Length: 161
Image (cartoon, rainbow, N blue to C red; front, side, top):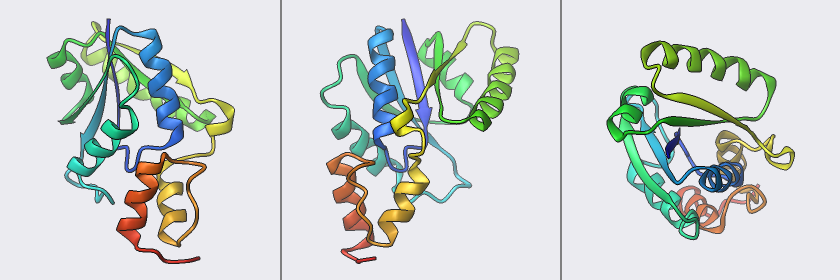
């Protein structure tokens, strides 16, 4: 069965990678889809995020990396995916994601949403936290893979906090 795990991945973190590994173990194939949002200003452009994800997931079987525009539910239907995987860190995530899952089910009853709780050691990690720490020259090696750390250093320079 094909599943899709979508996000901005700006940048990919160890929390994302944990969910990718776990979802890839559950489903036959997993598309990790980078959403393109024309109104949002990302630190890394779409091609950079795709490249970072490909490098970070290179050893995970059954994973392919793509990008998409528009509604995720429409992308899943185009790709023939039966499941959308969503990660949950905190209670607020669940409330938001449940609302989206209901709207998606209303638009297409053929595609289900599966929620995977984030492992507790990753629950506080977010891409925005990683960007903030890195922007001030902080060490994010506990939160993101080496390829991402190198890209953040290149993006922000070798500033020291």
